[in-house]
Image (tube, rainbow, N blue to C red; front, side, top):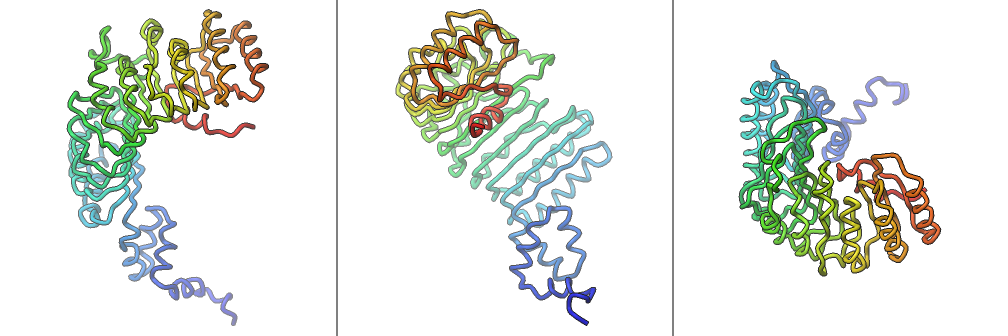
Length: 388
């Protein structure tokens, strides 16, 4: 009988592989399948607990009243046993229960993170009416973090304290409803990418600190947070709380990509804003923001000699003269390659004519319609798409 006809041939072939090769094969299995693979034999069970296979943990689950605590207890037991090997932790969690139901699970999550001081990559996404309240109190202890991403729509997230000791961290992303930044917050100086968003969903009631005419974050606070970031190349600020943040950009001499969106329906709060003058814009290559901010910055943009990609929110509905002046600058700015527009209203005939005129003057300029500027991911993705 040939080897291929034997029902035990595949198993025998796998048994003949060296441990390191078999570990690489097992590394291509997801977490759930790997748990089943442990049941094959004692050797596989031991290999499934080898350090290379314990470096990444991804969890996708729904926290319900009956299972929330049990899931967190299981996660805590795993981290207590293998936490020293863990380098990447990714959690995608939806909770339909009221927040008070998950209070104990929230406390247990803090215990889990306290055992993960060796993490390099941390990604959390909490969603649902009972989403775990994201907290960053455990961040200062994670000295080896390279990237941290926390998104918690519907939850409040407060960033406070001194995170400057996270000397390895280059990428930070925080998005919540709302986002709160403490005046004493200090971020890692090695950051190259920073995203902070506090977008409130349509129809939602804003918290009291975002309802008054003033700004919960003054320019001095934002300046104190951003100024030490001498290596920052990509920055996204989203939410009404950043209304006074633009002057702080003047200290970011290495900035190449900027996404700035207020998500504020009160046009008077946007109409008076402008990018600050200075040498900071010489390195700027990508810009996504409101049209009126760009229009008010036409005296600054000629110094942005590397600006290749521009995406505009709130295209003007009536201000023909304003758009004519903008189109005149765009026609005279040779580095500009892509011009995206986030249209949230029907396009007027005069506006369409102005676009056609701009394209006739700059045939190489690619003008396209973008997705919502509320989300930085849409901006980064569409600005890098190849022309069809």
